[in-house]
Image 1 (cartoon, rainbow, N blue to C red):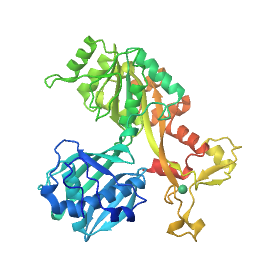
Image 2 (image 1 turned 90 degrees about the vertical axis):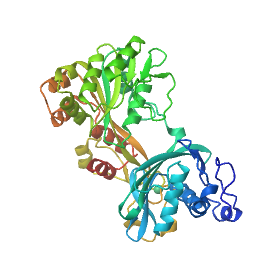
Image 3 (image 1 turned 60 degrees about the horizontal axis):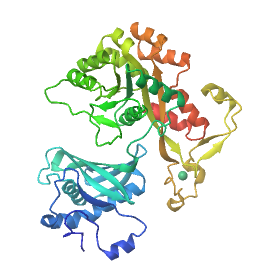
Image 4 (image 1 turned 120 degrees about the vertical axis):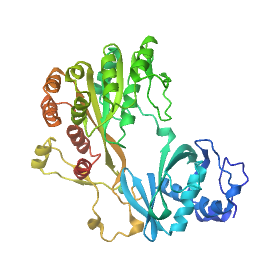
Length: 441
Ligand SMILES: [Zn+2]
């Protein structure tokens, strides 16, 4: 078998016709070099390449074909377990003997330009790749586990889908107007908040993109994580400068809107709030939801007055799965239920995922092709936005907790996860069960 050796290390497509015939319904991923440009010498690792390259390609290609964006390989006793994350939900994919798993792990480490002689330290890297004629980036994290083995986390990003606009993310017209308004006022801070891995950076960057870059000068002091934003000036920070000094430099350069790294440090948060008297800021912060974000921000900065003066808008996103259009089931909802959740009582139908017990005769081959029988395909972000109106400012100044802020938000009719989730259920895009699942976790 030939595994693409001797092709200069840039393209590892295999030339094996037999293999292609067997697998002609599956496109294989092409590995196109390490992100750190430390390109591996495949010919010096012939045995590993023979044992690991095709299995690694198959594993990732199959995962992508099943719409997974994350693959985990984890040693578990006598076997290594492979699992996929599809739309944020883990699925067991395969079990393999530890040597086979190890060959894949070491192969992917090699392709990512990592040191395969080291198995007792954490290593992270990435591989440029192409799948289905689209450029992808594969992030690899290896972590040592007991017994000398390693766990591997593989995250695949489709580079075509990388940067999203407020419209792509379903921001309402009202919210888009609000972001433009704050951006054009040359003052105020807008925060995107959320739990880790929930797309908060995507939301904060969409907020940056929501400001007219032709009218206002927009710059970034943040780590853009490889994202390339048109018309955004990236300010290199000097090592000796603190955030306050860097902000002053952008001010001297007449920057109107500034995107900064996540706010987790009290001094830096204060510097941003002070500077937000004469510049607009966009940043993110870890929190459960928008109200929780306000409570945590007050606890971090410990200056409610300054926050009431400068914080203008807090946006949070929660991802829920979309029902598969090919196999969703319509049902007639009970009017009492509709009244309880706040949908019009004359709503004729809602949708839910098919339940396995309804189709007992189905075997594996009859599963819905579009969703693999999960009933869901793709995700949508629910959005919640709290504008710091006089009523909300009053609560901030009074030291109110997240629950009190949430209650006020409901009273004022601002967009919350609840109202946005029910809207999406009403549109038949997701189910009440999925909303419950998303809010339990
Ligand atoms: Zn389906």
